[in-house]
Length: 424
Image (cartoon, rainbow, N blue to C red; front, side, top):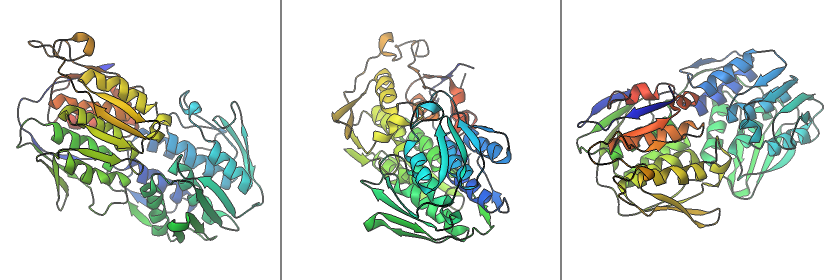
């Protein structure tokens, strides 16, 4: 189906949602599992398309690895196939071939990998030819572009005959994702020395130990349910999200503190976390450098609450599945808000709220027939655009274009959302 019409709920709701498993944890666990010789026991792996693509390609011996639109899979497998000396052509969708990978490839080449760009310098598709003698045990790489480059290098480091020291240059973004990688490596018996004050990570040559590892539910997926509760019109509405841990490895667990300011109380239970509506704060500021995937969710909630908010640390969104900053700027206008850049490439503000009811050009519902002019949200082949804007339905009917994009990270999202509202 090319679009879904999501109806505003008729009343309050009280549901328990079994969240999808973490794609971030699953993809790291799969690389570590492969580096044990596929001897670990992984439980509760994500059903997300990105993770299923990772599984398929790890099991394949074909000459081409097509990652589709899975950025993490592209980066992790480029490092894995290189260090394990498995020649592959790494490719993906047209958008994937527009996403830079040069920093990672050049670091791998510096270590001893033989990799060739097949089209544009610094971008897929790539030809991995093999891995020769290790040339160096020290590399430098920018810390502010993608933590996935750093995680990819960390996970292969124990296999290098000389080990590896990584010096991170400049600001370091998404530190929780790097920490997640380190914790998962440690769970499989590998020691990593993280000297954060000196921006240095060290891994000696050593072997991964096969283990039983259970994947946690996905905090990124949880964020959309926080948005649902934040925008709910009935104060008694509540949702319990199952399978989440209070002391999580996932950086997006920051949504607990973020949404406390936006009107959602979190209470951890034996089974997960209970979300209840409370009064929001008077103002909002947040640096998303360590949790950029939460930006779209929060921007939509701010728009729905008509609450101004300052957002920083979102520069990396421009090289995601789409230019997420531009996509937000386009779509927020349809629900009566704007995302303005108030400091170039640094600070943005959600502001300029309007009640454009009855104006079809603004994409806002007209009185008397809300479905006829419900805002029509374009998703830009981006799963997070679809899921971030769907909670607008707590306020008004909304149409989400190309809803199937959620298969990338949360395949059961629409089925779960259908428990509290009508979807056509």
